Image (cartoon, rainbow, N blue to C red; front, side, top):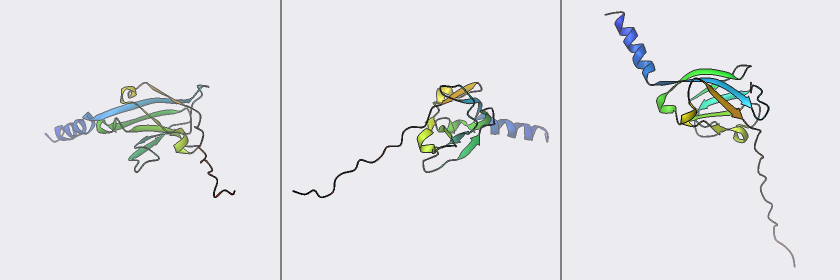
Length: 119
């Protein structure tokens, strides 16, 4: 009975988990994105519950709660996360993931509105 309890506890703990394993590559080159980070929660939002940096080959391997399956994002930590953050669709989650990190988006510059004006 003493041996059964830890086994049951472990099974219950991991039964609601999703295994994420794969690689992040730069588009269009296909080179590993070694500065990529995967987060649970939008990195430019209110809260990031967890984050996982990839290794030098762009690889990642970790578990998430099934409840977090709609809240997975990735971005390039070498730039502003606002410019490179992408959402990972729930249907893409698994153990053979290949995520494509595109180039940073262009920062929008605010339009200048002339002040006053003379006649």
